[in-house]
Length: 291
Image 1 (tube, helix red, strand yellow):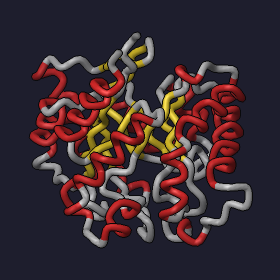
Image 2 (tube, one colour):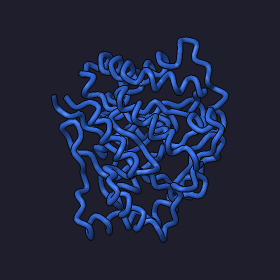
Image 3 (cartoon, helix red, strand yellow):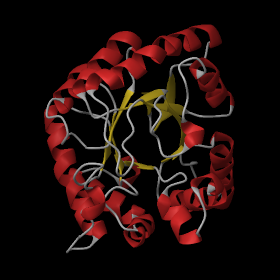
Image 4 (cartoon, helix red, strand yellow):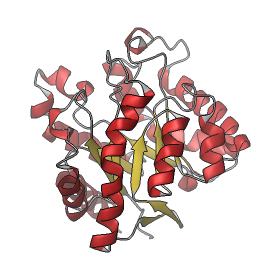
């Protein structure tokens, strides 16, 4: 039986507002943090310059770019000095090892001019900026597409899913993936958007139904389920620490437990604050699934 490819995506936030303080990084410390992330086993590093946590007010485009511009040159320095490959194998293709968490086409264009190909990680699945589909397609970039409703300021009041959260999230992916593919985007990775316009109970329902989502999206788009890529991004989120009465700083054990469950239920990538534990989780998954 062929071993399923699982990627671990590490998080580095070059802003002061991200909900987990341990992910925040200054421009001065960025090179060290990036080097450490890959040394610890990250396959991809996701760089966030604009917080989108619930209740946050996103930075202006120029403020977001200022945060990124201060560190992206160090990305090139790292790959040049370390000799680390800039791409990683995944599902029979190569993905860039850098991801940028942005919903703005302007940021995508400017980042590409500095570092070349990267993965675009868009929390809005193209709804925040109507130009991002055409920009991503023109540059030939892989695209992480997340489900969300509203904005960071309003999304927690938009948790009503009359048809059930799984069905409505699935239908959303089918509709938006169709539009993205028509625009010319070839590589799409879906992200259910844990914590974004979902109650605690709805988040756990989505964890249980990850396999169903992949199967339904694949069937609608004419793809085998194994060719649908799904990212689980729930590291240290409130769906974990609120029910346990703890804080994000205390939520690492719960995070690892839920990452393993997501992998067992069909996730192909996990987005983590704690890279060594994410890598260990992947190892244990492969031991569990070995025949």
